[in-house]
Image 1 (cartoon, rainbow over the protein chains, first blue to last red):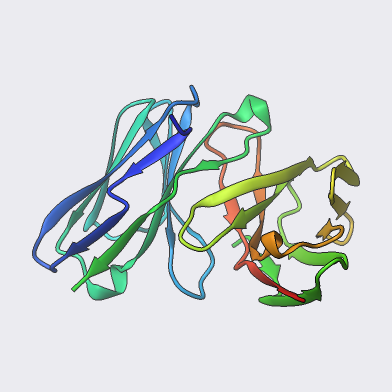
Image 2 (cartoon, helix red, strand yellow; image 1 turned 45 degrees about the vertical axis):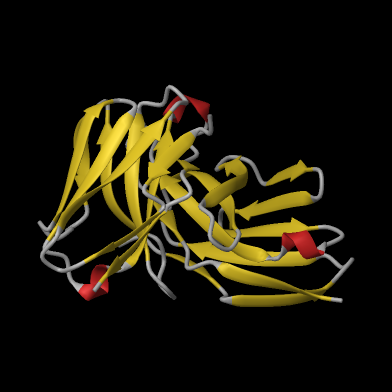
Length: 113
Length: 113
């Protein structure tokens, strides 16, 4: 098993759909993150969960709703998205005592029609 | 807010050394990282350096940190075609498991034969 697994890898949805992105980490880390990667823009931090509590919400619109049911799983629930939300959504995990580096999943490529 | 900047493109000849530069503004950075992203993939950690170090070497990779000037560089010796990718510089604020990690826009490295 890879360290951080994201599903689905690709998702196409209409603006009225509800869908969810899933992330699972097998590294025993205690923090998980959602980043958004759009073309020609820096990675944008969306949410940070530490010990299953949300500690960062980086001014993300409410149409993105994160959920962290346990330290190994992170979800991003999507509702009434806009075409400009099309991007690569990257999940990552970290453990501060080990240098704090992020371990990323392969990403979920989202297209909103 | 905190900022991390990189040049967008770098082209080098195969076999030469590549030097990718990065500047950051956060004076309280604890760790600085270099990530590599190949097409269609997530970000892969290459190396990181603790903020009280000024150099770290790992096989073909050399990281130099000038904390006074807030300048970080990544040198890749004997650059190969497999090194073609986007390279991201990132810095961590603080030591907690939920500290923010801020990324640059990435430098696209291309290799000439």
